Image (cartoon, rainbow, N blue to C red; front, top):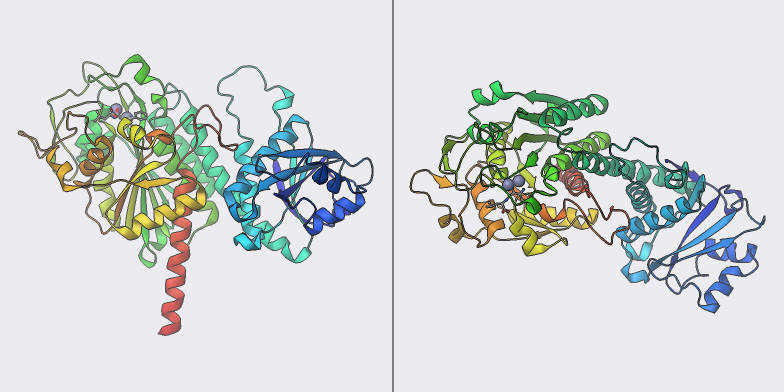
Length: 517
Ligand code: BES
Ligand code: ZN
Ligand code: ZN
């Protein structure tokens, strides 16, 4: 689907379906609605008076224009009560509308863009939300099916975002570009996490990252086993050694050459390309879905793509430790003691607590960038799914500022995070008789928090946050722009939005400093 922005009068919009957002109980209130109502001989008034369509969230109503307009259909879509409209309402509504347009097999669809000044939603924000919603809502993963997609699954070829006022076209275009960059990141994350584990190996992830870097202008470096050994990444290597697929350590960098003039953010994603549990083997049911145990990695790779496309004035490093967690004569075992990159020793209690081992070495590696802040994202614990379900990812942060920024980004991207504690009591649960720490408490208490306090042993910078997205990686129901089955792409838009807001605030701080000094 090709999305364009346009400035056009309603009478000039040529399309198969014209989509109009309608606020609840305000069917005929907006200027556009009034124009359409009078052109269509009071059709909107009739619909509203008969109560067939009121503009309730999720509601839609189709009208035929029968030659009165160059648009052959008018699709009214409800956005609900005015005071409850957010950019996510528009994302959802756009997804619903595009799906309807798909059912009607339309080739060209157009959306009349409106701002919602009372809700502080500008034209550019509306354009961004509509672009994200329609692209993410039109996503379909066909995997390795050897047959072609049936024609009715095709989206409209073109979606026009139309503003009636020509002065707003620049704003619409800016929002559209931003929305396309965000959607593309989310789609990269979905595609990668949907791939089967025999295709999406650590080497495949690395190649994908390299290709993306080439097309977006990111710097990319891939470390192989030997280099990891030289860096003493003993934790990552212990996990990887049970698999015939060799590990990779992916380094993506945006603005590498400006590192000393800008804040540095490091984003780290867990890249376990399949998690059998190792010798602490999972049950058959527990293993289902574990191809998605690299969803954190997918989120970081997707976010880096968005960050590059937006060309944020920020130094951002994306790190992905990638490995399989398998069983073989070579695999690591419970009771082994391994050594991470910072020299700390870890007694293995469970080989199924492997993600934190990969992250440990990546967190140590991040130190060399002297980062302003580090955020890792991982499908780390089943316990986090028990705690928060599919409503939010768990958030652990060492500073309130970083926590609040991630909460805010989560809100804006509608990829929610929720704070969980790192109480000192949890450290006790990881005390080992034979090493500096255990990799798991061996018990069932506070599993998500225990994972977080384990990771805290490997950080040496001013601010760090850990996001446990285990519940969010796949099968999210009830959101029109997220597939109800398969990878959600969660995290890519959250991290990119976090970086975008960080860049915005850093710029504001610099310009206010300059004006004072
Ligand atoms: N990849 C899993 C966590 C997971 C579970 C992700 C369900 C998505 C859905 C992780 O490696 C794991 O196995 N964690 C263990 C930790 C325990 C051994 C301390 C868990 O949650 O049981
Ligand atoms: Zn595991
Ligand atoms: Zn895992």
